[in-house]
Image (cartoon, rainbow, N blue to C red; front, side, top):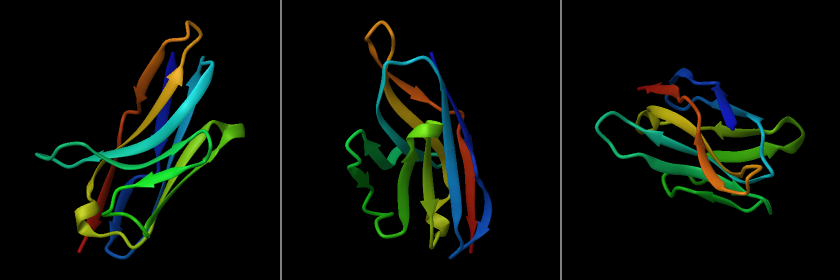
Length: 120
């Protein structure tokens, strides 16, 4: 009932910046939280950043001070601004939202993923 479309990934040199976008569409009662995960080949998926309804944000220790998560309520879009990128940031980045659907069930939805590659 919720579809997520991600964009903004690509190839960047170390020290560069990228901004990921995730636009939500569909039907829901409330969007409780939005966040970004990433997964590198052979590695477990990890939470990168999250933002909840009250605006509180959480970041993985590895990205604190470099990444910023934000949202635009009018556009139902969440962003991840990534600065000072490192090769270790290379991964597929997934947008995720927690939403309450019209039947009042809570679901976790995922985007298709966008590749971020940081070269040395």
